[in-house]
Length: 220
Image (cartoon, rainbow, N blue to C red):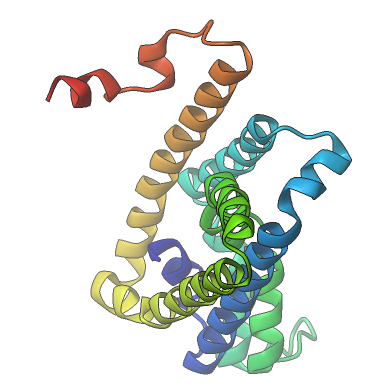
């Protein structure tokens, strides 16, 4: 949510709402696709779930690196054209609300919408739940689809309220928040890669590195 708020802080309210709707629809489509055909897709390409997680981790690492270096916000600088009315000196024409939302969606769809929001963990859960739903029959499938659309609606509502974060932190505050979150995202992506490599290599990596804090939880 803070990442979305930072990326859209210079856009109009209408553009943010359209972008939130696009991301929510994308979330519903991806989850529905993997719910019904996720395992078949992975089998068709010969991709294991661990390999999928590693690829997702690498993409997240690149996004986190951009955020930590401050390059992330510059990617969405086109949004200023909506408010400023373009730049006559350079011939840049002002963007409409829909065009601005579409441009931001093209840049946010990967890696923000996928694999940050809809990541390997979410997809693997959808695949597993699809198998459970198949055993329950039609009502299991209905429940699974209902859960997907409920999740997408929750994503939409959450993103719609992201403007509140922008107002609280301000532009400078959002820059700081994005850089800190970038560092956290880099660490999270590295952890995803380590855990997946550990599974592939049959725990040749130290368990404490692949699953930190797990032993502490067990002791409690």
